[in-house]
Image 1 (cartoon, one colour):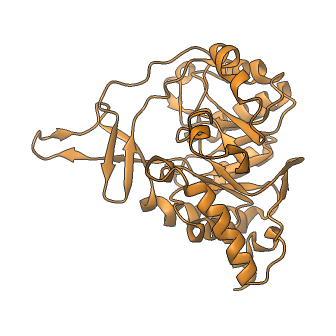
Image 2 (cartoon, rainbow, N blue to C red):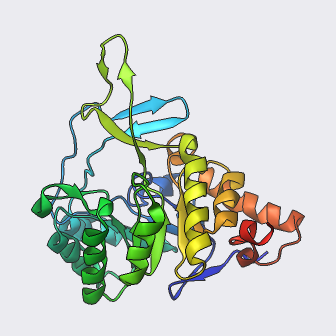
Length: 306
């Protein structure tokens, strides 16, 4: 069975990646299994300067997943390049840098700092961050600000640019169109949904920040629906990378049949580190059972059977 896929000029050994913020920088998992078996590692978000993140508590379990408000804690791009990047050079898979900033200029600077890092093949923009120069509005919640961000970064970089879209909008297709029109090489659907959990004994929210991002099985149907809608409208204009609620190969196949060309396993990594490998094995087994020789035959198939 052929699980290889070529996206934005890059060949991936399989379509199963790990999601940013759930896999560190790919180093911890090397003690458990061969990370080179993954299609790609999307690294924990990087900013221009180090960030300590939010106050504790910043993670809480929910009935079908988890809420997190980590606050994008990271060592900053300079320290990453000096101390962590040399350690991932020998891992035989692609690395994608999730980047963010508090201003358009910071996004650009982080990307430019990574341009000469050959192991990093593309950037994934986290646009669920407030733009401090525009009154704190979230980059991914304003089409004009989002379009300008994507367009201006694309002018300055050589590597492919993916945009991870927020589901906390009225119509995600509007934001997908803005990214496509502004030159994005791919779309990542979806980021976490805004949620809250209240401790009824303490009579206050569990998270120090009150709200956080909901991930895990609860958001699977939402992610599948949004991928389906975007693929239905734009087809193969740009590749869609599906993320949200994937714990099994069946979940991954829902994303793929809705229109995703690759998928990212996220929250499942916290309780089953081998989940991504099981997804790869499951897709391979499914293709054998269904006598499907090439993975690409599965992309968007749900649109062709109606």
